[in-house]
Amino acid sequence: MFSTKNLDSKSEIISINTNALTSMLICPITQQIFFDPVASFPCGHVFEREAITEWRATKNECPCCRTNMTGLCESPITNNFVELAVTANPQLQNNRYFKMKILETALHENNKIKLDKLIKILKSSDYLNAISEEKGFTGESALTELTASPMGRLALSNDETLREHINEIGLNAVLEKGADRGSSALYWLAGNSEGRALLSKDEKLVAKITAEGLNSIRQEGENRGTSALYWLAGSREGWTLLSKDEKLVAKITAEGFNSILQEGEYRGTSAFYWLANSSEGQALLNKDEKLVAKITAEGLNSIRQEGEYRGSSALYWLASYSEGRALLSKDEKLVAKITPEGLNSIRKEGFDRGTSALYWLACYDEGRALLSKDEKLVAKITAEGLNSIRQDGSIRGASALYWLTANPEGRKLLLKKNHLVNLIDIDTLMTVIGDGSGKAPSAYHRLRETKEGKEILKNNPMLQLKIDRWKGNPNQLFANPKSLASDSKSQSQLPKLNS
Image (tube, rainbow, N blue to C red; front, side, top):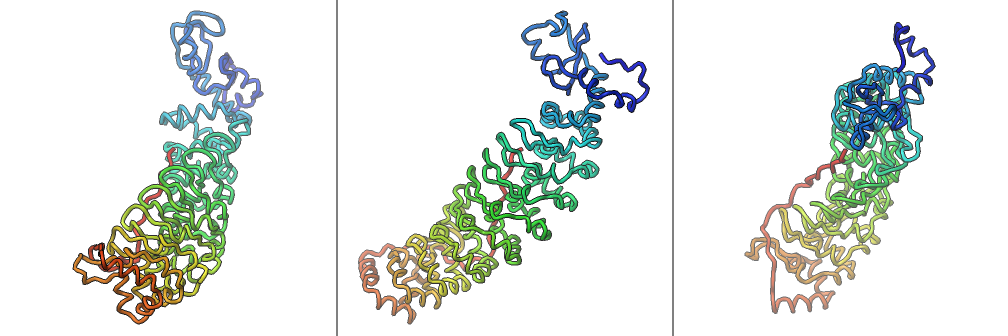
């Protein structure tokens, strides 16, 4: 073992050729620098604890001298030398094996003693941000491992000095291989409540975020398709952060904004979807034309495939909020990106089951005005979108057709667009919004009792024929009468990013 007999201080130890020192701190079994060294008894040879434990499971001879081992004991002197060597040697600060041992024993096992030891090293070296270039781990750093662990995020949150050591490269470097390919330290901070709270209180850290770190797309695993931006856009802390930081918003790219989650309960959603699903997010969209210009047709129309909001899209949420309808009303280029699928997709679960983006446009003045002035948008209306009946909520039984017939703009649109009338389903037309008494109106009642409606019936003999046949065998559907719900929508929670 290395002797310290003639060394009076740490500075003298460090002044020794670190390569020579390091060569004495390599485990004979793993051929890697020690992280958790222990000495064999009685011979005193030192090994990595995990490696020698595995060795002893099959044989009890010392790997170096073949002495029968009766036990293992701690090796604090070796431990101290390892710490000094890592502090003094930049090459060791980027050692993959050493980092993996930190992750496994300090973070995953919640070993605070070893984590405190690690933090001491991080503060005295470039190890925190050093990016691995080893095959299979390119882009990874000690900072990545800290941010991916609850214990590590807590350490960062409680230690401002440690955070000050974070640099732009360490925060945004993207992992190029493995199950977490495409992720970064920023990704893990944004994907957890502790990390978002940390970003919310540390402006200097936020200033180090780059466009690459914010928008890089995870390529593997359950959260394939997500980014740091995705997680920020899906949380109240993230909305607040984005709303107050124009420079951060300017770093958003079209790819990061519209990338679609490919797996899990939130499959089909994007960062844009989550912003559209909140009044704060829509307020941000309304004040930032450059951000709106980055919306793609895929991001606008992608349909959520699972969960309570299955069938909804970013377009659905824009159409259901006054801020979103205002945005659509003033942006022809955005409206041109609407697809028939996005306009007519039916929400399959939850409070507003049976509604669609078309339903909400038909329900409000701004939406009907948009439909009245945009023939290309009207041409995208399908029979399903027009006739789908709301199955729950405050006005169960209503449909897009109902709202068009209930208002002058809508009736004029039906009068002008005969192909819409041809899409009308007779059961939807006759569905009564009420308690079964027949006193509440149906879409048919709206047509029969208005000037425009009577003209629609007169000009469409096929529709009148459907009505006459239905009257011979009426099968009206009834729902509880309630006033129109407020313009606010309930919001789903941000999906949890598993550490």
